[in-house]
Amino acid sequence: MKPVTAAEGPRELVADQLRAIAALMVAAYHCFLGFYTLIAKDSPASLLAIFIPFNGSAGVSLFFVLSGYILLPSLDRLRGKSLVAGRFIVRRLFRILPAWWFSICLGALFAWSCATVALPGEWSLVRAEQGWWSLWLHNALLLDVGLGSHNLNPVGWTLQVEMLAAPLIYLFWRMLQSWPLAVLLSALALWVLFHHFATPWPGAVYFAQFAFMFLLGGWLRQCHPYVAALAGRRRWLALAAMLPALALWLGASAKPLLQLHPAYFLLVGVGAAGVLFAAEWLSLAPGRLGRWLGWLGLVSYSFYLLHWMLMLAIAAGFYHLAPALLGHPVLFGVLLCLSSIPLAIWLAGFSHDWIEQPAIRWGRRLEARLFGGASCAPPQTLTRSE
Image 1 (spheres, rainbow, N blue to C red):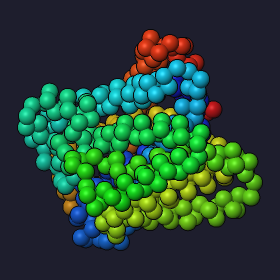
Image 2: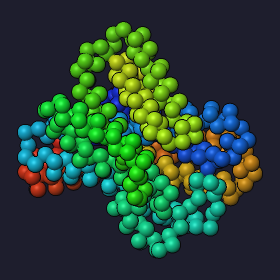
Image 3: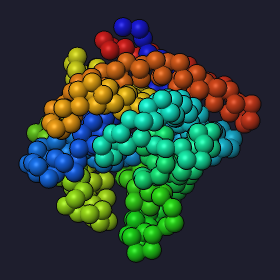
Image 4: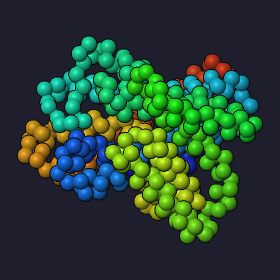
């Protein structure tokens, strides 16, 4: 296979593997999402069997914890340079936005070309009531991408949360020099979580519920030297820690049971952090599957952005060619998983090589022009077989 290069710096195999698993969970979840109400009505047992292991909410929570875990060393690499905050924000913008713009271009093309297709439930296609250009511009600037909004790619709300979390992570990193202040910031994030439900913020921004997850990842990064010392030792203890973490992470993710109570976000976030902690502790030797998951984690951002449009395109084809499949929602979802996910993985490799990585290098060059210093870190090469 053609090598995949990474311009953003060193990779961490366990984090990449978990990122791949989270992305696959979200993609599988979306393949069944259109029939959520129907499956819940006809077969509650099937609902739990599908939506607990393939739970998009759990996957997204793990993404946020991993972001906090990975971004702290990214900031550490900027230590000693001038205007670290500006450098960090420029890097986040060029890391997140170009691939997002590519995905909503595909989303607009698909929604426009299939405007007459009526898909069930959450799969309903967006309608550009005020014009496609206006809709694309709002989405491109992450202004109107909340759940339930008119958006070209429904995963955009998570990018809005990521961008809002960047200043929070920077503040946390600066405050780590004074541990009481870091503790205070973490406590404040938890207070905002609970206060949000009493006096909700206007608009469809979900930052309040998820902010503390980034800080959980940051705290885990601070504990990394201790976890590294345990890696590979007493794995039965790591497995014992993994089981309750999985129970929290996946069990609490059954949203209808908790109806988005603050406890839901706390349990899922703590569970996701526990899974990351136990996985780092286990530090299993990367076999063929582990190396493949590491590669998928490398391209997981593009996969995460592109899977929705490909899934909808294939669902529209099934709807047109075999409408009888709509009467068999579980089979429909399985066929969507088997067809759309491999295609999205293939396209993610292209997007990673030709959009993500050049954008990161452009961002480093702009950073060098604005703030001085080297323009780009040397790329790292990763393949499925390494």
